[in-house]
Image (cartoon, rainbow, N blue to C red; front, top):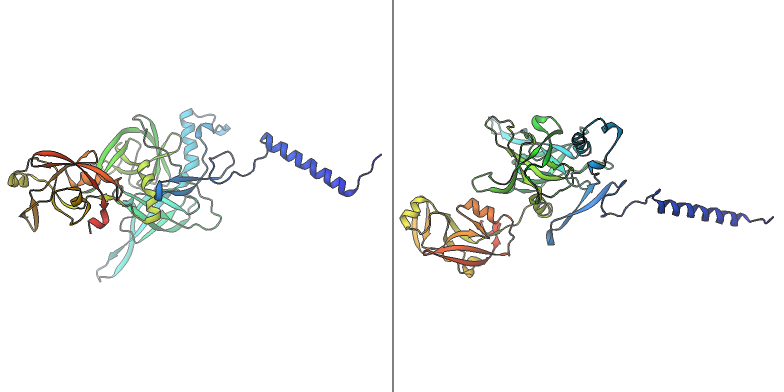
Length: 414
């Protein structure tokens, strides 16, 4: 009988163990952690998601999410397929929806500033590492302090990272203690939605935390005016019940992917009557990276003084069109002047301001008809400074096409 040394025995044991591990990995019995950035797989806890493009590209760290159609447990067996979807989506994502509360400052009788309770809304955690939360701008507007309330009852003071009043969106940030396990809402795609498809909303209506409502897409491409100069294009209309407190929460498809951000309702009574509106998620994805990196969204603008045409001006100046934007003045040496846009020459006093008539009348911008300043804001909402676009102007009754480079809106309107 052959005898082996202690070192030889150890070597054979180690070799046998290595062979067993290699076989287990090959058969899928043992799985090593996936590298950061790969798509979700069973057992994976997070993945990296890129949003934006070019210089505005940004990476978010999101929790892994399982397709609800793949979740088949004994607890869900008694329910219908539709009910199983609802339950699976809610149980996976409700903890990723936060309650956003604010504190404002008021002035008392002695002209002293005093803190008071502000508004309340919802938000979606979109990054589990840095604690970024997506919500509506009107939820945190004029807030002195912002608080993020999680599903476990914990509350953290948040900070406003960036706001986009034009699309009624805002990004907040909070810093939970080390070791806190967060969940996030996965992004979907709002480009190919269909009227009639099922949607779900999770939010905090009337401070009732993490409420789920179900409905359908009732309409698409709705232009909704949120202020005198702001129109949000392509809003999603839904009959899923949305009430005060739902603002900022996610609108989800049947697979639990965010397709919109619940923003407003049409209601004569103040409660839900089945007509709610959500900002498309593709709009949010486009602006979120800029909000995180710059705190704002940089947008292009025509560097000229423009006046919305009104009936008395049409009659007085005998304008050839009844709607559009009159070019009163162009910025000296600016993009508009260099492109050949003609300003007015004859001053006319209107109230406390002076309008120069006789210049071009803008009727279309980047393929969109413009009858008002609100239309212009909407037409240039997704254009950046430095981009070149086509505009149509009426010059003495003739329609002329002009290619123009856009200036920075913030600098132009100072």
